[in-house]
Amino acid sequence: MAQQTTKVALPACPVETTLSLIGNKWKVLILRDLAPGKKRFGQLQKSIGNVSQKVLTAQLRSMEADGLVHREVFAEVPPRVEYSLTDLGESLKPILNSMWAWGENYKQRFGQ
Image (cartoon, rainbow, N blue to C red; front, side):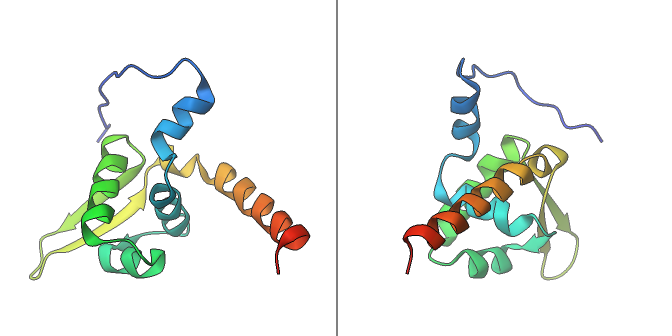
């Protein structure tokens, strides 16, 4: 099923557009943790660390609305929900890989 998106006013600068979609620490960490594959909410919360349930829920909903994350609910008792990257979310992997490489380089030069 094709996902419909609503046209919204985006910044003129492409860098600013990207930052408006993934420009906070939690969203980048969610992308990082979903890059290898699907995860359940509890797995995400545990792998990300110091994020509250409320904040993680809000970030996932925002990323779902932006077309970066897919949420799948399974009709089970108790209900099971899995999150994964959409094709659009997958297209951010090279950016995350570049951030990882840059961070590694920085840590080697200036870290402990």
